Image 1 (cartoon, rainbow, N blue to C red):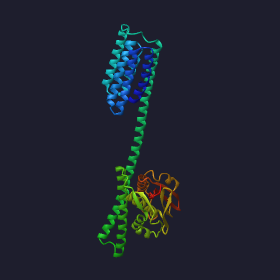
Image 2: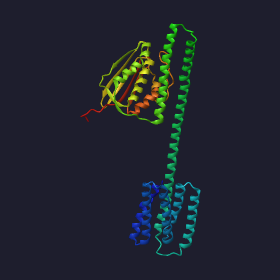
Image 3: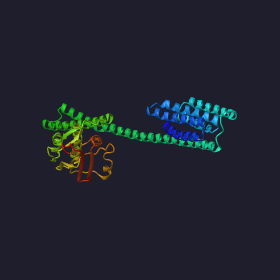
Image 4: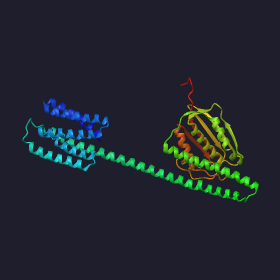
Length: 399
């Protein structure tokens, strides 16, 4: 607002200084030049972030110069005093400042009325010039008022946007807490019952071994859910982007598959790879591990028993794309539209596996932090293709 007013003042006052010089009104021209210089000083103060000083110079010096012009030359500058009063009410929120400028304008108007007829340094300006000053002051008030209203409108829109974002954030947090309550606490209660049963020797040795395997699988799944929750929360709070390095994809994919061997065997899934040892991307290593782990986990979760999962890598232009294809229950068009936008409704897998509901939100966030892209194609009852792209590793000697 201060900058807008300063720019409005600096050029017209300089123009009238030239006009008054041509009319040989040297004193009035000097006042106009000083007025223009004070506005230029305001812009300099704003550049150096001296906001309070800029406001004081803008209002104080303009008040003095307009008052002098009104008394000495009867040029209608008293109308600009009203403009300064309006500007002071917009630039300051202290009531005492408003009262001060209001009193100063009132006293000045009385002084102009009393001294106007007694001070005759030079001939009064033409009535046309007085009319121009009056219209200009009205235009100034309209312009500044509308600028102020626009600022208020923009701030209201910004507040509304922040309010919506906060509401969405709170909704996401509520969903996460419900996930923690349902998908973490409930399985832990089941594990407690299984452990108690083993403790009291309710099962025979063969059944005990089977239940121990189930307990181990439950613990691994709970670890993954908790890890997803912690990583997602940490990435949102810290806004960490990670360290970008060359990541060879084949070792990461092989390690991830090895970690899921029990689930793969349980569903009799066939996992095939089309990845060469040279395939690599530029990204954060830990982020790539989390992304591939979550995508492969979903592929296993929603694949039919005896189905196939294929992981392949393809270089296209400046990006390397990792594709994970599963043959399973697929995703409906309705769910595809909100897949990466909010915490997902927890859907059971083909073996009644549970998830955290935030895995896709997590990988979308990590993909964006690594300047990546993600695409999903799916058909219900047929399967899903999830394609993730990352920047290639720069080749030495190539541009």
